[in-house]
Image (cartoon, rainbow, N blue to C red; front, side):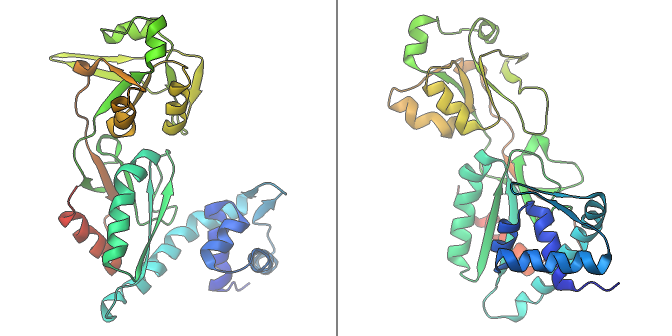
Length: 297
């Protein structure tokens, strides 16, 4: 019951992406080649590993068990190959980094773009998703999240300045409702509710002034799990929203949005790159960490 490393790598890509097409793009082969390799692996193991439909791919119990054990091993192989990079004149390799969507746009994309320009042989694959990812299990090199939600067993490196939020709505909205002057006034307003993809409860809006700290469970007719969608909803008059300052500052300057409760909003911990402790670090990732230290935000 032998399974080739190539077929196992193909299965790992399908399991990671839950998509034959996405796996084929990652591996640089056709979708039919991915399907053929997976079928060969299932025949060798005499087990079905994935359930296929026209719209989705899901893992069977056997497939999930195999992937849970296979993912760390595949990552070790990837890193072993990357350890050879210092022997080349030009470093090469691919870094796979997950980031919350706003973190990807605000800090990771500018950083990654500058990094690959300095190191033309390197590539950075950004996986934008708002769920907190297990970077080891998912075969990722690192992740980017707000510092306050990074797991304590991870090494964290700060990216950029502290994060500041803004509470805003359109001028037209405030023509029909008095602007809130205290966070509790939000309870009388329609707000755009934000839900994290991995949580059932909605995001609580946090405020601070002096020794007073408040967390408000806002209400509204629209709930989303994407900050850009929340901004679109606010611009369409759905109510008040909370955003990263960088996301709305141009709209505020243009008069399309009005901020409120500015004196109740304080700096929050910056975005951080997090990664697991490891004895052998790929050369490309080591270069990336050094690049972060010298990067001007």
